[in-house]
Amino acid sequence: MPRARLTAVLLLAGLGAVTAGIGAAATQPDDGSAAAAATPSSTPVASSVPAQPLDVAAENARPGFAGWRVPAARTSAAGLRLTVAATSVAPGEGFAVTAASEQPVTLSALRIGWYGGAGAREVWRGTSPPSGRIDTTGWPAGTYLIRADSGPATRYGTLAVRSADARGRVLVMSSPATWRTPGGFLRGELGVVQVAERYGAPLAYATEADVAAHPALLKGAAAVVTGSSRDWPAGLAAAVRAAARTGTNLAFFGAGTGDGATTRLTGQSPACRPTSSVRADWVVRDAGWWGYQGLTVYPGLLVPGLVAGGSDRAAIAAGSARQRTTVAGTWVGCGAQASTQAATYSVLGSGAVVFSAGTGAWACTVNRTCSGGVPAQAQRFAVRVTKNVLSAVATPKAGRKLAEAGQ
Image (tube, rainbow, N blue to C red; front, side, top):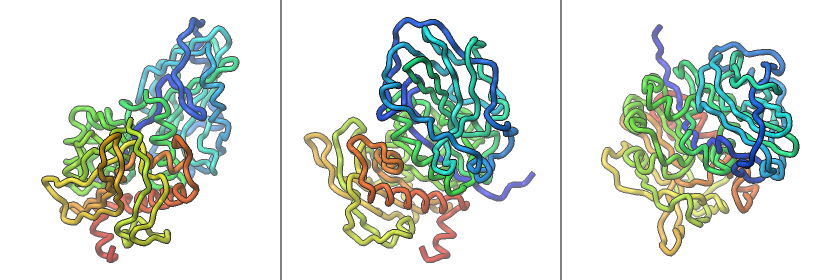
């Protein structure tokens, strides 16, 4: 069956700790003694969704569950452990879960999306006695939180239900290597996923490991990569570069992606590490960039606090793009040293668009979960730019279309 369209691949770093909690801040689980309580009899919530290409609009029209997040006190309470053995499964494939507590445990599966602003949908729930595995039959592709509740405690694990095919779609590519970072999911990915699902981009889902092992997932796809995922699996960088040479679009909503493996594409190299105390304003350079459409901007406009959690600087790179623009840039302090931060937009010879935010605080600004708070102005700015970029890269070889439109 011939396929002419390309898709976008959205690589999302920082899906959150596999055994960490999500509240005001993620915490590591209690390691105290407990009795096992794992997966219950399967109890779908509402009707099942067959394993087929994801209809984003229809999925997000379903009832959401605003109570998926709980107070930090529950995620830090002792007496409950949760381990999700898998990072990625195909729809209908089972995965092992171990939940341990001295009290009864309730498990649920929450698909992350927009859902009218609720932010998630409860797809499945169950209780003891344990069976050891959860069946994903009827679960649509997406990013999931596996939640365990027992007494005063709650724990979360993370799972990707992957798509069989990403052609003609935006592939949301998550990063298992960063899931164990406390707060990683909440601050590194959640906001961008919700924006993508809110505005109806055609989506598919997989992990970095899935794509590294099966590069054919990128065939016919434009890759949209988000988050500060530094530790790419072997072979992933080569697969992404090869896809870009055939016209795939890339968007990196973070900093330090691939720990410099994307420098030839973005014209950036890592500057401040995620552990640095860097915090600075986003300073607009190219006010005419199409990503700023719908915003009132001018050269030198300051967007408060958008540069944090690591940053990238402009670098001279081999294999330079046909067109490369620094759309924002500022000076930042990396500990005792000063550096620069840059956000870049490039068009490759293949027509592929490459956007790199160059800041580790992008995703947490979108949903206002960054440490230290997020100004409302910065959130509105980041949401609009995210929407504009995702809308553009959903078109194959987007650079050519943008050029035709004078952008």
